[in-house]
Image 1 (cartoon, rainbow, N blue to C red):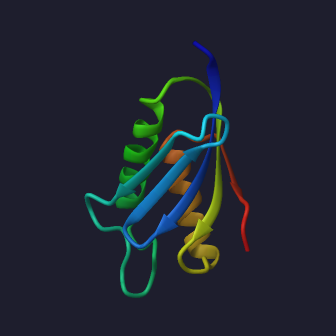
Image 2: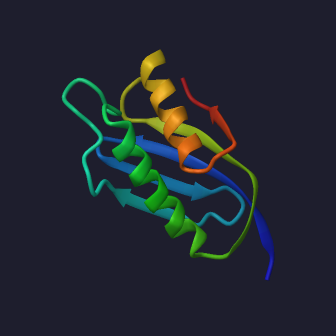
Length: 107
């Protein structure tokens, strides 16, 4: 069994997160159990966003063996543009979910 570094792409949609492991292409489409979007912001509830991210990452982790040292999340898309405050919310949620590095790969 090959052990892969945890390096994931994250896409954020209204009350839904998709996570794809970059090397294995393991994919998780996770609807929010608790809504994190509002009419004014796609990421209005950081705690619920974190919960959804964690659930998606767990699904990806179930697909194989992963090294958990220095996990990286690449935010590759979002349904709406993120302002500075929303980027900070996304980054904090990913850090709380266990990521050590967060990269925004879109604009």
